[in-house]
Length: 516
Image (cartoon, rainbow, N blue to C red; front, top):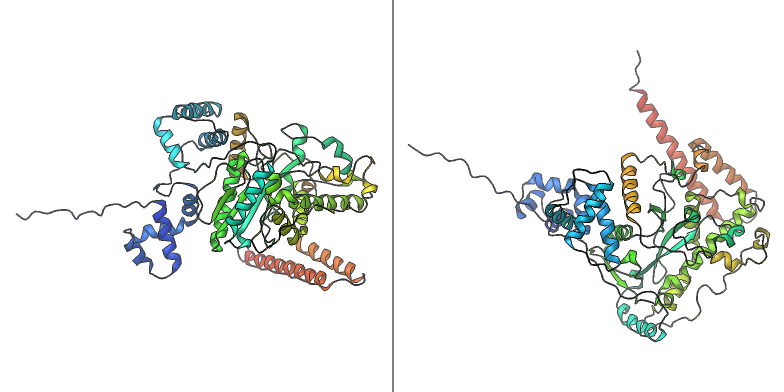
């Protein structure tokens, strides 16, 4: 009797993240058919289709995790994982030695405080946690202190060789700065010397991440960090002036900085650029993810005041223009600062305007002042902050003649931008983030009584009428540049397109109305 045998089943093959990325890149090249690529990698065509469907998730995971990892399993208790990860990064930033039992004990503690009664931090959980969150930790040395000028000069000599063969447009520096966005001239003395480690003034500040390249040709979009996850003033705002994120103390954190780096690395990858980024060694910068297009270089400890371009005048120029705009707003409100409504949205707008006003030449000179000079260039000795003029009308808005514009300009010069957060604040951050992901209702409490709750969004017809009013205003003035009218024409064209699109949608929806 002839024996029968079942057909041999094909062995299941699981690719690593690196291999999945390679599959996606092959498809993007467009050289081979998808069926051929699937055969080359030993996977069925439907698996390749799944990779393409989850392309963004795979590429993001490849940036964030170990590329030899195969599965992207989510943790059973993400809130516990996220709390432990934030605590873990903070502890490593402080050079605290951590062991497996200590991490498991901390996880149990967070689980208890989160009400996860059935959670057990087993060795299996620990292995999964370590696998899910494999990140490269770069050790940096030293604490803040006095600048050693001899060592700073040596660094500048070494820097010249370091950047000699690089294109200046691909050499960047970023740094954080605190901003008391609600500080008007009359409040200068109240805000002065406030370090903002908490307290009642902490809601009056944000942190800005500011960055640009060596030749001044590219200013990175500002990143604003506030306390509230969803400020009320952002209600109905779908296009923010600057990118906004939050942390419990409006500080930069290792997690926020790592995510920002990954996003920047992706952008430079799309532009096919290899970029070097110079940063200081604050604790929020100690956790650097794996990146393909962005190389991070740390400045030596205790030297950033003389070797970091942002500290040579770029940030000070940004704040000068921000506070100039603030003074102008007060002057146009009859000199009454109480009439000015300053919320996170308005601060975002003014920060964007101020950053746009910083000149490329200023940025270029600040890089030169910090030692970013090639052998065929001359360094500059004067900083870009010299000669910053006092804003027009300063005497009309400052109530105390002893307060100088320099005091107003530098009121938040030493405000903390990073630091240690407590376990309770870690839990609050994680839960706040989860709540935002669940409902995204924009019900943050930072801007109570914001005008965004009171003023309705203008219709397209109202917006067009406002543009026409602006046109009549400019037409009534002498020697107005054509660029203003060109901008008005662009605005009107956009508004008209919005109106036409709305009418088309209304006509289509009318076909589905019940005529009974």
